[in-house]
Length: 285
Length: 139
Image 1 (tube, rainbow over the protein chains, first blue to last red):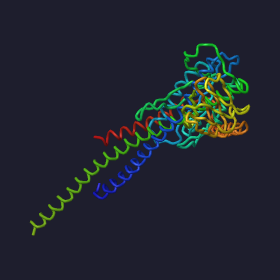
Image 2: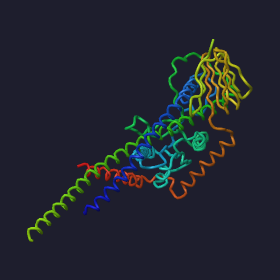
Image 3: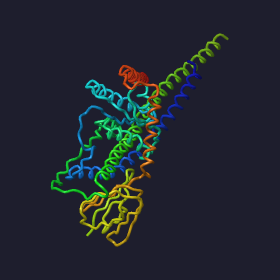
């Protein structure tokens, strides 16, 4: 390689490094924002959880179908993935984990029904197959609850029509900046928390009627859980992208160092050659 | 006497603090809740939630709907962020179904595990190649 060629190569690697560095910084700031959204969505989910566990323990005459355990024959899954790539193995790990469970369930003779949130999941499952009941993508960095109402309610309708016996949420859990892990969370039937302080017999006054209020409450609860999963998945996506881009920038730096070494060697060799040519030329005269 | 009031929406926390009295637009008419109220669960219509704070100031929030949970010492208002109505929800459901049909258009309803394995193997191979390249430059 001539010195000029190497110089151009160094230039192009430097440009790539600039891009990956910029992407890293963008991902870092987006991750912080996504984390903020995670924290601000938490109070609602916590309050909801409290109310739901109160309900589950209140001695109500009316039992909502979302609270009843059924025979597990058909399983619904809401799979949350990112819209864009360049985020390391985030989506791949999630799909691998999901497929492992799917295979196990199918071997037990259970039917699966998918609801896909995010473009990566859609393109993956439209290639490998699977019964897709609902789909949504392009949620952007600030997902709106409104965008999730449709797909979630499709699954809830299926559950109400007895076409599903169980509903899971499959998404990435934000452990910390470096670690994200796939998680399966059971949405339906609801798993109420222990509320040991509420052992005495009591019930709410329902306005208007218990079924209506519970219906709205439990639907909102499931929606809020899915919303949380989506927001958390975005934080995971940005964290994974940040790490991937950081290592890309580091690698570009290493490549540049190496190329500069080669370039300097080539330059020195050229100078030595020129000198020896001059010296030998002078000696000939 | 005061009661703890929390007003939250799915996207953020709106208010948290003590109040002497809470007025909320329940679906069957406005309700006023004083500390020590019996447990109640009610749907909310669109309207104003007013709080009488301990320093006898008033503070108000608009909700487009949601739920009100009352415990003797705690009042929780779970506000809806989005404008919601039965027909509106219905149209969102239809939209999600249509999107699914488009995604399903040219695929089987059964998962092709062999194909899935190949897909995943490709991704893993890509990652491994990157790692190998990294190892080479990192000498």
